[in-house]
Length: 364
Image 1 (cartoon, helix red, strand yellow):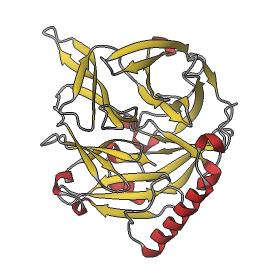
Image 2 (spheres, rainbow, N blue to C red):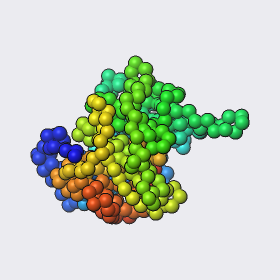
Image 3 (cartoon, rainbow, N blue to C red):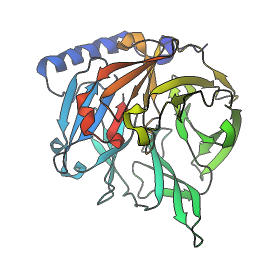
């Protein structure tokens, strides 16, 4: 049994009252309030033609839409798309032209410039945004990009090389490391970086990643998931590594179809959560999520974001013991009841239809 207490969440009733008042003000005025808190879950959509981009914020608790034209910000942000999120920040990148990168505060709309991203033609990547002890000392956030570099040898064979890239606000360039392990999921927990990598036949390895003084990967645990790996009728599996309330969880998600082939036929078949003890790195299947709601990005092909996040369901108006997911191929927010193992449509977001799957972000 996995227990989450209010003390662990460390959210006061006063803060909740302030957020509720701010939300009521937004609804009454019908406009986006820059000072409104972003402690609640949002779906953030990027859409519009180049030069006329806009962000639409969908409040998952009540379905309210708040639009914010990107032209209200500096011209530099035009043409940028969301490639990562976490800790109230979004990683915006323009990979088509200038390869500029910025870190945008979703509350104040103030952004910090990151080093330009060097475009790699054969680089299949995933981004994540982590809150870590300062690196460099003036920064609280570290942006990491994990991926594989697919190149063709003279014989036509495909060679896959693992790549890890990271930087912090204030760095002059990205630090690149070749080799290591192919990462499927990553999360920061208790000041350390943990990653999960897949092996054949349902076996997974958990790693601790250290950035200073040099990039190192330390194997800390190997876990066999063959007993829960594939269910009847399951065609696709995704795994999400999530930090919540100082605990690390791995969500093992089974789908009925492949979203990149079947579109919105990608129905959730089953989700199992495993709790990972960061001290012993032992894993245990979670039977009940308690008064928690978790939010996962349906498509995790090109970015991790924060992998997902959890919050106290009763305080924020969500169903307890429930996992919420956005499907980038239709206009719905889905909820998965962890006890009853059933899926339902919770919220319809018509504007999702005009966005590509890489531009849908869960943020809180």
